Amino acid sequence: MPTSLTIALLAVLTTVGLVGSVVSDGAAPLVWAVATVVVAGLLAWRLRSAPPGASLIAAFATGILVVSAGLPAAIVLTESAPGRSPTSNSALGASDRAAAVDPSAELRSALQKADEVLPGGSQSLLSIRIGESSTQVGLLDLAKGQRVWFQYSRSSGKWYEPSRSATNDRQDAVFRAADLAALDLTAAAAKATAAADRIAIDRTNRHADDGIQIERRYQDRKLIVEFHMSGKEIHADQAGELPDNLALAKLDGLLPTAERALRDNGIDPAQPFLSGLEYRVFAPNATAVSGDQGRLRLSIQGGGRSGTIEVTVGRFPIVSLRPGTGTSSNPFALTALTAAGLEHARADLAQRSAVPAIDANAVSLQVERDLASSSLRSRGAPPILNLGLGPKAEAYYTLGGDFLRSTRT
Image (cartoon, rainbow, N blue to C red; front, top):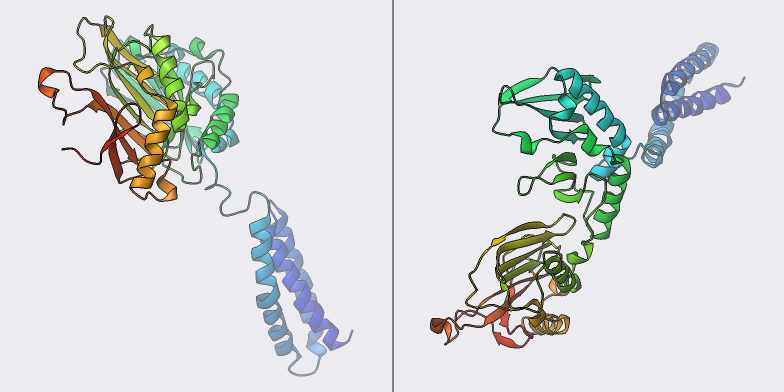
């Protein structure tokens, strides 16, 4: 074989072997490496009888080819290979990552382990958390007033010894395996991911608390399956059903959601039983008026009821109503607000304050007493709309949408 051909083969085959060992998976890299060493060794051995300097030329040619062609090829193939992209994990939301470990299987395993850790443990559950790296379970040992906590690590592939700590949780915080009998957690995770995409949750922004949490919420002890994604939450009930309120993410979903929340609690939206209303669209830049992102809060005082109803996008309503005989000094009915009036006020504020396009629909609002009204002292101050767009623009409007003023007076 001519020396030039031997040198060419040595350079080409060594480069191909390097690329193959880098981009392959499983045992293939070892096979590529061994084959490359054997072939390169045989070709190098043939160069013993070649003219002086041939070995140096071969080494130089191989190095040039590896640097100029082999390394770029390895990088391109590695990044484009399925599952090998450096963003393949960071681009996943909590439900996607949990799906990789099969949430339903993890739940079954957690329930089984609960009975091993504590007799009847699956009947004394406080919490189950399924994350990317671990599954964690909390149990109530009521006899000792202790919380029993244990976890499974995916990196080590084993359950760790439980730990105990004093707790004030009691039977009202407990749920049982039977409560989850109708729950297909994997299917619920898929629904939650679809809901997150619909309301534009950025699932590429991973958070340490991303994962699935099952527990009773403290406000009303409703059993909730929480899907944590990028610092946001989508909830499901114990049957895996999501709340039907994603429309609340935008302004046009405000009034229909508020009306349904009132009617579901026996309150006529046409009656002046509201003492306040707060709302903020599901957008991080809607901060001009206080309020939690994607939350509607209705304050009730009238009709023999007082308290609040809170509805947050992707979560079940929290109702805190109690019997009450008092009335508000500035009551109003939900029907005093109209979609046309809200849109008129929004468009006016956007134009009046030269709001940039990115903030034009980032609405936050509050219905409150008009503190500048001359009738304030007579307890007849009318309610007004405090409307905000984006992080800075803010003005006051009548409930019908007519401009009043830009700041308090």
